[in-house]
Image 1 (cartoon, rainbow, N blue to C red):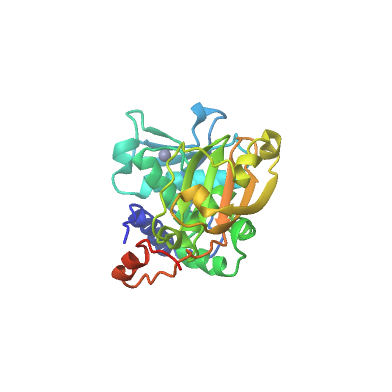
Image 2 (spheres, helix red, strand yellow; image 1 turned 90 degrees about the vertical axis):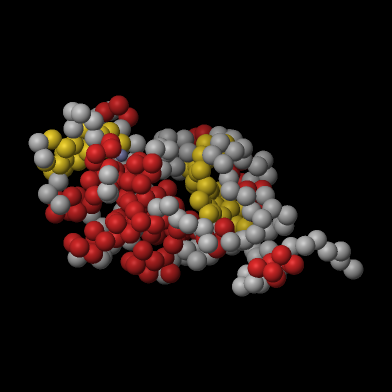
Length: 291
Ligand SMILES: [Zn+2]
């Protein structure tokens, strides 16, 4: 089993919802902040490119939320991220500067440990496993399902897609790219369990045979949220010795020039692998000549 470094963080978010008796979607993080006694204030536009702000002054906590973005989903995610800093052990001491201020970069873009933890906290706070999982089971696969879940949770497509990958039982991947390079990729556990696939590094080049590669040459299409789909080979993304077909869906994420790709419908490996028994796996993956 791989260990998930953010399991505890997500559990902390879900425990907070339990404490507050909140179980229905959508989760309103402004309500959560108010009930924790945290003041909310709109942040001045710009604010050094920060997504949000945590203030700790004279024993009181405040959250500054962004007003420079039109997206309600991003605003809610930013507030939930700051609640993460308020709530997670060690965060306030580590991140608040001597003037009592922390500026955030929310949205799975920062490599900083505290920012990452607050992102995963926000993700689980807005999309808790129980209600999110129930709705996921009623949703279509791929982009249509992610769009339905994003509407129900009032979350961005990108944040919802990442949570979808964490909660689905199917082999699924979500990739964000810009131009010819991959920003990040998330694999579902069922996908990561397929032997011999490689983890995608940030900055890795997109394979030219993918729908995403062609899609990314149309900057206007990305800005206007155009979409595309087609058939893809899992190998073009994750390497490995076997050719496996997948459905590739692509959508432009608007003004900031990024593309979201969702891979679903991934065929099982050519060889039948009994995953119950490691010796069987070893045997199955030993090269053999076919008659
Ligand atoms: Zn932060």
